[in-house]
Length: 262
Length: 230
Image (cartoon, one colour):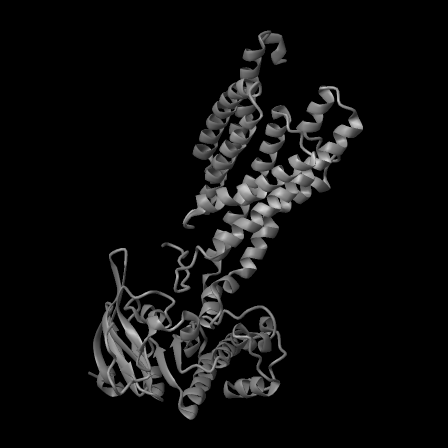
C-alpha cells in the first residue's frame, strides 16, 4: 500500500521504517500495560540502529570499492563495537568489555579467518564483510546471553557458591554449574536456528543470493554453511567468555565479589 | 607484619574490622579462642555477628586488623587451606544436589581425598544420622539437612567449627535435634567452636564464654553468665 504513496525509493524506505518502528512501539506499549518498562531502551536502540545502519551502509558503499585489507579493518571495528554492546549485559562484572571483545575476537575472528583461508568464505569484501558481520553479530548475542545468564545465576546462588568456597573448593569449581548452564542457555538460539532452517525461516542471505541469480540448491547449502559457522563462532565465544569471566568475579583471596547490592 | 604472642590460642583476632562503602560492619574486634573452648557471639540483629564470622572464614576481607590461626597471620595461609581449618556452617544448609554421602565427600574431594564408607558412617553417627549416607538430600527435613551440613563441614576435619545461627531457620523440634548434634560434636569431642546466635539461652547451654556485639563493636567478653546477666 505504501508504494501507492511513495514513488521515490528513499521516501518509501523511510515510510517502511516508520511503520515497522510503530509496530515495535505497540509491543512496547502492551508491555508497559503489564508493568514491563522497555520504552527507553527500545527507543534508544531503534534510533541508534537506524542511524548506525544507514551510516555504515554509506561507508560500506565507499569501502567496498577499496582494497581488500579494508575488510579486516571493518571486521575489527565490528568486534570492538560488539564487545561494548554485549558487555552491557554483564553489569557488575569487572573487565566485561575486555572479556567480551577478546572472546568475540577469538570466537568469531578465528572462525572467519579459518573459513576464509579454507575458501568457505570468499575473500572479496562484498562477501567477507557481510558474512563476517553475521558471525560477529551472532557471537555478540551469544556472549551477551551467556554473561547475563552467568551473572543472574551467580547472584541467585551466592549461598551455594560461598558454601563450596567455605568447604575448600577452588573459585572455578564453586561456579562450574553456572558456567555450564550459561553456555547451554546461550547456544539455544543458534541450535534452534539450525534445527528450524528452511522450515520456520528462510534467512536473508539465501533470499539475497537467489535474487542475485545464484542456483537455489547452492544458495540453500550455503545458508546451512553460514548457520554452522555461526554456531561454531558463537559456541567458541561463549566458551571463552565464561572461562575468562568466571575468575573475575572473585578477589585474589577467592572471595565472591559479585554480590547482590554491592 | 605484627609478631604473634608466644602462647598461641587457636584463633585470635586483633583489631579486626570491615567497612563497606562507609558502612561499618565490624570494628576493632579483638578476642581469642583457646583449644577446646566454645565461644558464643551474641547480640541483636544487625550487630555484625555474621559479618564477624565471615571474616574469620575469610569469605570477606578485613579492612583493618587480622586473624591469627595458631599464631600464624591468616593472610599467610592459602584461602582454601584456611577455610578447611576454620570450617563454617551457615544458617541455611545449602546442600548440593545428590546424596548425603556425596555432600560429605565434597570437601575431601577438593583436596583429592576420599572418605571411606566407615568414616562417612562415623560422621553421620556424630550428628545422629547413622545409616542415612545413601539418602537423597531432596528428601530431608530442615533439621536433618542442617545436621548433614554440620557433618559435611566436619568431614574436612576442621581445627575450629564456625556456626552461624545454625538453628535460627528451624522449628522448635528440629532446633533441639540440631542443638543436640552440636552438643555431641563440640562438647563430647572437644572441638573448638565459635557459635553465632541471637538465642542467649542456647549460648548458655552450649558455650564456655560469650562475646556481646552491639553496633559492630565488642561490648563485653567473658564467661557466659558475666556477659549475659550483666
